[in-house]
Image (cartoon, rainbow, N blue to C red; front, side, top):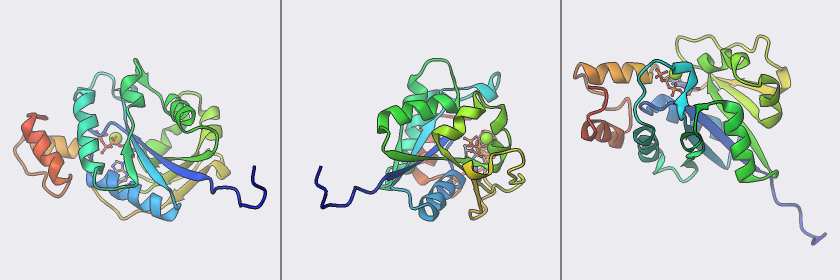
Length: 202
Ligand code: ATP
Ligand code: MG
């Protein structure tokens, strides 16, 4: 070890989990805003495998959701997409996502788990909530229509921040495609084209 040089700065990595069916500008604005406010080196988008909260609902094939997320994030050098959740068999739990990414990045990074107000309010129902907060710092972001509150959440483990309000949901995008309404400007152009090419949400 060279005692004369300062230690390298700890890398700060955001994790944005979601179903991304499809990924939309609400996701991208939230990730971009958190990256800026928390000075993150990168944000990893992690499309869910088999979303356990949505068991019973029809979810597009993981490969389509993965590719749409790649298309949506490709132009941002600080965004990347991880396959950890779609390659792991069985339902997706945030605690597994965090453990896998921790193993991939090693001990010398700080992890920040980014989640919308709706998902944050359900956090304590996630698997192993007591371990989640040891694995990452949690950042709850505003989402129109959902109250952002940290009731019952450990204060030092969770930050709440306001992001520019984008009243977009994947559910609404799917519903629009189903009735032939446009999703231009709600999702990135390449995602509009991918949805058409693969006949998703028809
Ligand atoms: P669906 O309607 O199918 O549930 P969604 O729009 O909620 O889709 P998800 O993939 O479920 O998208 O969301 C992934 C993450 O992004 C969650 O933490 C969610 O709270 C957050 N998120 C989704 N849309 C927004 C938005 N418009 N603003 C802020 N956060 C959002
Ligand atoms: Mg959702």
